[in-house]
Image 1 (cartoon, rainbow, N blue to C red):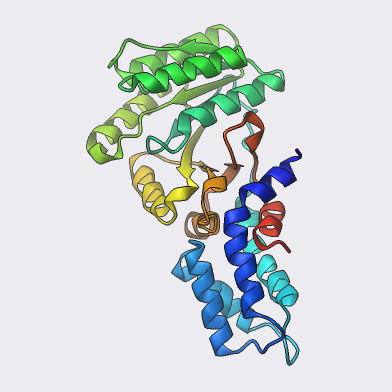
Image 2: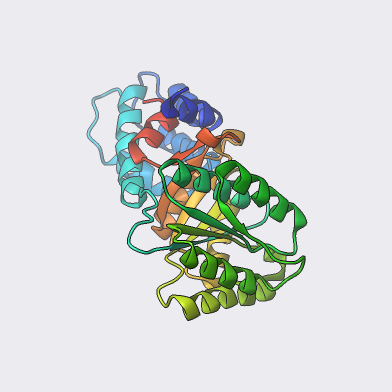
Amino acid sequence: MSWIARLKAGLSKTSHRVSDGISGIFQRRRLDEEALEQLESLLIEADMGASVAASLVAGLAKQKFGKEVTEQEVKAALAAEIAAILSPVAAPLDVEGYQPFVVMMVGVNGNGKTTTAGKLAMKWKAEGKRVTLAAGDTFRAAAVEQLQEWARRARAELVTGEPHADPASVAYRALERARAEGADVLLIDTAGRLHNKANLMAELQKITAVLKKLDASAPHAVIQVLDATTGQNAIAQVEAFRQMIGVTGLIVTKLDGTAKGGVVVALASRFGLKLHAIGVGEGMEDLDTFTADAFTSMLLRS
């Protein structure tokens, strides 16, 4: 199955809500106040957020349509507006320019952070890159075991620590090994216990500090992994992690499990952070580079 087909299937719950909703509202009728209000509610239900929904509808209201408007016209106009929000943030994760290129993976536990790290490792290995993984979530045995399995599958180097070891020490040793062995990329998995915000902030900042002892420019990317099924809560998560550490980009997973895929638009509008990739399933091939046009087309079935 092609990525476009996977994306279409993965976004089916959200696109069913949005696309079918638009079809229900606009069946050869005027673009009147009632229709616009219904559309705004529909976009909010898809978790685009109140401000984005209001902005999109306001933009639509300014368009010059005929006496009656069709759903195809509305979808085309809406697609152009959404793509204008998403296009500036769509950016593949470029790991060139440093050796090793150090990537810190951050995010709340359960968002798919460790799995995403494993999939990225496999992707880069398939491209011929040498990859080292660091199991920085030392307090969660399951995370270490999961990363061990991904390292085995990707044939990547893995650096671990003793249970409850200092995550910063694991990151430091991992960068030492990655440099010694000529790795192209170092991926550092981290904890995500947001309920203990002060401790987590100290932990992430310490990891950053020790990395800089070996490479003043590291980390070169701090990628926050988000679970689309959390909807608007993802906004609060990004705000929390941006306060702790300088998040440089996002990856949104589990879009196949929700009708809240509109949160991708909300995130782009609110933060303007690079959106590197999206996930629509558990398989290796279900994570791919984010492109605005493909996402918008599948979202609206336009």
